[in-house]
Length: 362
Image 1: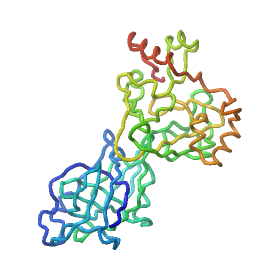
Image 2 (image 1 turned 60 degrees about the vertical axis):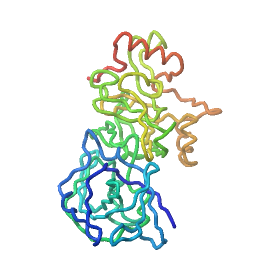
Image 3 (image 1 turned 180 degrees about the vertical axis):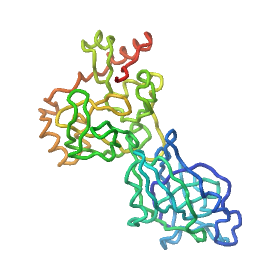
Image 4 (image 1 turned 90 degrees about the vertical axis):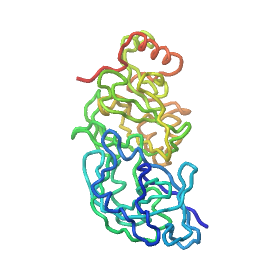
C-alpha cells in the first residue's frame, strides 16, 4: 500500500451524495450545482488542510466503495474513512483581489460525509489557476463527470496558495494588491516616503500548529476600524503602536511591536489550524512602514530569524541593502523595535485607559 499527502479544501460534513453503491454514479451530483463555498468573511483559503489518501494496490488509483469494492481511504486529523464518491465539476474561482478564473476540480466525499475539494494530478493544466492567488470562494457551475470508480492517488501536493497574507492587500500606487502577487520591482506605498520598489519577496512555509501558528488581528482590534478586516501575520511580524503611552514607556511615540507581544489585546489571538501556512514578506531598500487593510506594520527586517529562512541568493540580496555585523543589522529601523517587559506594560496601560494602539489613518 502507498499513501500520498496533499492539500485540499475541507467543506465540512454533508449529506451523502452517493447513497446507492451498486453502480459508479454519484446520485446527487447535480445538487451541488450553484453552491458557493467561501466568502469574504469566511474565505476558502482558511479551510485548507493536509489529507492523506491511500492506494491499497499501488496502481495509481484510489478507489471508491462502489460495487462492494474494498475502498481506499482519506485521513484528516488522524481520522481515516473510506472514499464514498468522486465527482468532477466546472467551477468559478474568485481570488482575494476580486479577479476570477474558471477551471475544473474534484469533489471527494468519504463515508462519514466529510467533503473535500481536491486538485488533479501533478502537471494537470486544470490546476494552473489554483496558485494564482489566495482563493476566497469557489462556485460549482456544472457537473463534468459523475461516474467514476475512484480518482488518481497522487493529486498535486501543494496546488493552492496559502499564507498569513492570503488575502492580505498591501497599499500600492495602483491601489491595494495581494501581497502574494508582489515581487521584486513592484512598487508599494510607504508611510514615510511614498512609493518604494520591492527589492526582495520571500515565502516561508510552516505548520499552523504549535509555534508556527499565526497571530490573527481582528478588525478593530488596534483601534476604531484598524484594521478594517481580519489580518493574519507571523508571530514575529511587527505592528506599529502609536500613542502617548508608548512615548512615556519607550521615549518614542511610535514603536514597532511584535504581534506575539500583543496577545491579550481583545481581538488579537493565535490562530492555529490544520494544514500549513505560508508567510509572505516584502523587503524594500530601507526598512519601511506599509499599510494593509488600514493597519500599519513593517516591511521585512532581515534579522537573524528572517535570514535563517532565506536561500543563499536571498541572503546576498538582503545584505546588499542591510549590511550587518555578527547578525546585527546596521541600517536604522523605520521605528524603534521594542519587546519584552515594556511591551507588556504598553498593552496593560492601553487596556486600562481604553486607548487605541494605532489611530486610524486619515
